[in-house]
Length: 351
Image (tube, rainbow, N blue to C red):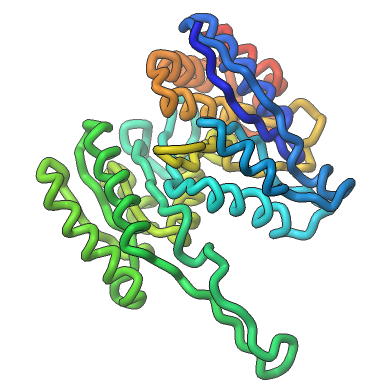
């Protein structure tokens, strides 16, 4: 039987609860499809930091580099100042493991309500490819005269031709693989950010010549946000930089029905990739067995697809669709009509 070694970081808040259900589904579908998963669990997160002062040691990064797949629950602890864990774990892992693609499916499933009037599953089904290792998130910049009336704060957006081009190529390839409209939209701000997005636009146009079967277009980020609300059916794949990708993917989560079903992947096509629900740690629901685990289960589904277990991934997605359509009253925590564990069981029973 084929075996996959998977690193697991349950994390904070409700992270361990939803990861447990994702693992339950992975194990069940593995039995059906003829593979198994061997999990190595790491306790990085707020509790460890509060006890030891340690966030993410370099030795652990070297260990994680040996895994092809990492399943993450959530990072964020109410007793830890915002930014410490996020930068010390999430961003550190993304940069250290060169997870240069953030991949976000934006897909509305039947039975899930969207705030968009007169829009349904046929209208909301696209992917966002976000550059994940450069831009404003590199931490480049600093302060001058901090804490004084003359204080200056500088935050620089770093964009390299290598980083931009490899992100664009991933997006073009994904657009071709999806086989839908084969339309790739570059989201930027060429009229104001004239250096960074001049590079993005030129690279986009040059790479596009190698993909004559892909239709390309461009939208300023503000216009893309409007179109995502007004005409989400216009999009097939959107590619953008780190900051804009961070913003529009949260908007995407809302139009697909909420954070409770939104999953994402931090991808290194040649190395270790990390998959996670994007809804956060939701500490107020910790231990209550009421949080929706479907986003974590769909993160596992993305991981299966990344592993090449396409049949297993299809099984999981179809099971989730059935549960959403026929069973759940809502995707909101405490309003599903089932406990966290029961929702996991429902998915398993529908595989």
